[in-house]
Image 1 (cartoon, one colour):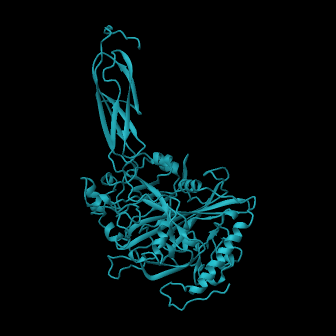
Image 2 (image 1 turned 90 degrees about the vertical axis):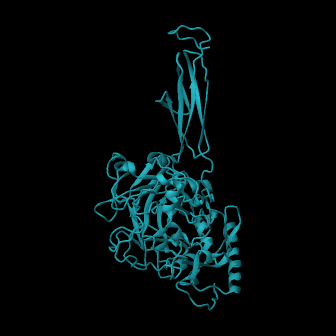
Length: 588
């Protein structure tokens, strides 16, 4: 297909756009191609996951992140993972300057209502699932974007780190027989470090509800020595989960990390809330305004703490597709981004919201991606949004070891120079040769095989070809689809409450049962019972004998975020049947 281009000047890495007339022609042709693909009989081997299954896979394989903090000297909470709209103002451009006030949020939370109680930190990993067939077998690429609102001692806005997990032999049930995590890739500044299933550095926390790769993350601090972990970079944890679990609560909270010989400190553990067994094993709690004061590490990155002092916090999953529309040229992109960097993407289908509303139209669309920072003199520090990241298209150079300075390798997939193991460029794989150096096609994606190739323009793996993303071919491109409910402003609104019921005047020398019921707060709940101040049991009910003396019965409930409530009942025996002092009356 011959495509015409307009004559607008390039801005930074801005790509050339199609002329309006050709754009409509292209859309029409793509629509016809889509219909043809839909009408083509699916092979007997092609099948698709449901939405619930896709959510389940993303939760099952979500990483556990062990993180170092640097939070003394009025920096409490600075190293929490968060979400893009933590301050609830719908504006990403002030994220850095507002995040520098997180210590005030923490301090205010200890005293009740304040200006900051509208904030919703909600630690979040932004995800996408790519599903494709390889012959009769299904594979997945799972993307997890770890977001921090500020970086490098708070001097730069938006830190983007990501974890990519490739799983082969998908059965439809996460963790099913034959499934293999083939390799995992993490970002380390501008590099992409890979570990394969046979590499000793790749370790998982295996539970009944998940298989979670263990990742270590540096704190926000910047160092003059770039060889030292800094600025939220990700590393693989070299220790097994069983070794970590075997450490006593008083042992030093440290782990070995990839490409370093010595252990590194841990002040936080972030655990996916969608894996109940992992949450329980770590005793992790959601981060809310009500509990923020107790969930900040408050220690310097040079301080070592015992494991029992490590803060354990749950995180939620949201969608990369939530953020992509904020870059679009026909949305109010100027609130969050600048036009000095742009990416053109040919969308074969529109991006829709959870409620079915149109968020980005089909066709060749421009996305503005330069980070806007209202606290910077030039309104930017030069960072680019996720839509400009090569990893968003799989088009990165995989490495095993860091290089200094980082980012010296470039696959050149966008330019059309980067070839796969079969000699294909992305244009050859998609059929859109004219996209080379000009625009991305919506479904361009390079899947690495796990092998490392020392070549700037060749990687081991393959560009996904043709209509791989269609249901007829057993595919799904989740980078443009919103799977998880947004839950805007989510946080428990009503305080935890507790009631206790049962007979206050039971017959003396009988066996009685009392009941506790929690409400509000954040489930699940745990209960502790006390009789005259002595601990006597757990669970939502308590049963015991009533003798001839009154007693105080109390129960305390603790919810999932650590809030507590207590209720009591005064129990006075009834002697109405005239039983003897030491005679146990029969149960009526």
